[in-house]
Image 1 (cartoon, rainbow, N blue to C red):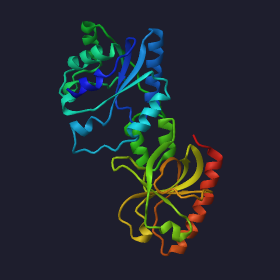
Image 2 (cartoon, rainbow, N blue to C red):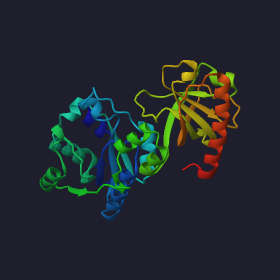
Image 3 (cartoon, rainbow, N blue to C red):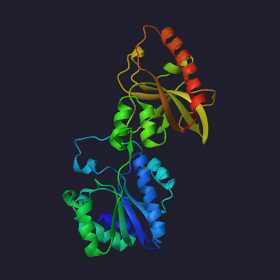
Image 4 (cartoon, rainbow, N blue to C red):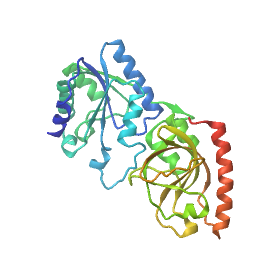
Amino acid sequence: MQVEEELGGLSPKKDMLLTIGVFDGVHLGHKYLLSQLTEHARQQDLLSGVVTFRQHPQEVLSPQARLPFLTDLAERTNLLKNEGVEAIITLSFTSELAQLSARQFVSRLKRYLRMRGLVIGPDFTLGRNREGNANSLRTLGQDMNFSVTVIPPIMISGEVVSSTAIRNALANGDMKRALNLAGHPFSLNGRVTSGAGLGLELGFPTANLDIAPEQALPADGVYATWAYIDDKAFKSMTNVGKRPTFGGNQRAVEVYVLDYHSDLYGRQLKINIMARLRGEKQFATAEELKKQITEDIKQGRAILNSRGRN
């Protein structure tokens, strides 16, 4: 069984207090739960650990309903490490794992990870048919000798902080709301690939990012962004959309890095998206577009100068 193979390679030196989930976006709600996990683990002299999944369970349980991810596994792992968790355990969510009962899954966590307790949100479930909710896990914990601590959700402006709420904010191009819910800027990572060279013709050479098709994107438009090259931050402008002025029909992410003049082709690029300047628009001529881009850059510089990188 794959889950046993993935868990079997681990050998924690102490008993563990665990939380389980995708943690897509590692937003403020996740951060609060993780802070409670690490504090409870410290108080009980246990190791704090996160069990997360390589893919969202919905890909297996409801493959017809595509759910765009906010953070890929590498970015998610980095964000989780920043929260002070002592161990991150990554499992492949497979149909085999989905068929395990709550008791079967918990027994494996106890056997391989020396689990002594779970820290979960109020809507958490695990096991076949989502049978392991907070109440049933408490009952199971009495029988199998592990604790269950339920952490309430975080509310901001009357809204429960969730990955779904952040996806909705992105779909509306509301980067301020996305930032407030996540507690950190929304970022995109991709390798720079060759494009049509339209930006170069206009005098604004852009880097085309090869973005995973499952990656959530903000609404089409022009954004003020920070681009990270060799861990150094550069002001940048990013266009998300189909480039209607040139008859484009496929969404693309193009980054114009300000004050940078070296070749980026083939390099990995990360951008933090700070603010949306405008929606995507079709211009009558390339000259009109060039004039608008010049104005966008002026506005973008002002925003990035005033807001910084977080």
